[in-house]
Image 1 (cartoon, rainbow, N blue to C red):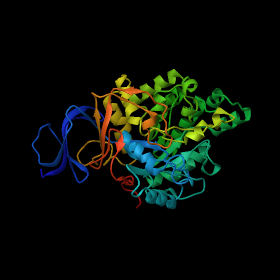
Image 2: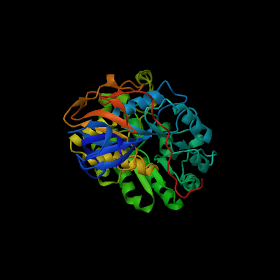
Image 3: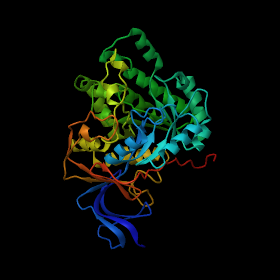
Image 4: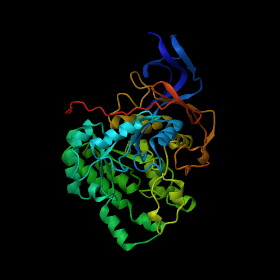
Length: 450
């Protein structure tokens, strides 16, 4: 082998199915070889990783960066710096900004905004309007996915019946990208609105597990009817999971949950209140246990964050109803530490993290030949974790404009030491380094119209 730019030597590499010792050779931003430890090779720089774990850079499939239009909450710079600090090297960015990303021009605008400002790689998702851009044009413009919303969105983007979801998927399928579907039921929300209620319990009742299960069933039935590839967002109830498990063989379907859904229950609202108000609402301990089993057995394909920050003032303000509090919380900086916390408490194994937070989302969203694995030919996006060093999550160290995390004070018996993007170190000990090196990535669409 010719001389390489960098050799990461002596690490235990965490793959989606195993942990194995290897030296990782990098040249021109790509991994060019995984070698038996100690293999002689000429390298410009050698990084000694003895005793360290080496994860693939994480791929977060559900992120809101709030730019354009909502930059008091977050922007590309702040959100990607937080991701870099935490070990997430690719963000797939949802379309619910101002304006919503629904046309090729909006994708072009976001691409321009990312140039020279993104500290990690970005892929942009588009929203399907009831009367809007041709999905093929969105795909040609680089959309990572096209999102179909079934509840709690402006009327232009609402697909609230089986017929409308089938029609939407029939449009998206030929474009060759995944259709993301947020499972819900607008009729249940409307009924809850008529009943009123300001309490936390009323908010939970407005988005019950039955509505999630109905949304999951509708999405899979529509996928089976059209042949479209569907990704179901944020499943978080045992009933939704049972529906998913029963119907998943009928179509080309993947599903996600979030790390917070693997940890919080409705009981945590008493302790954390507005900080964890988000949709769907947190459920009962039995639902959390069902979710944990589902990520282990593959019913849930990936774990994301739904990183959805709001300004501290917005979260702290007084609202007439709990349901009126802006929904969402930051997550990209704490995803890997909290997944490591779950591994330390025997909920997950280390390879589960690589599978759920890197290999699976990369493969599902058309990036599986370059992202999500430490393997020859892949981008050299990597995270060095020290298993002998403890860390504590602190709100004061969060780089998101949200300026706080509901995981404040959690002690993790691992430490995210350094983060690498395309073979260059972009963060060290939670501090982003150097210039913004992130690029915009687009999905592979084999055999589809150019």
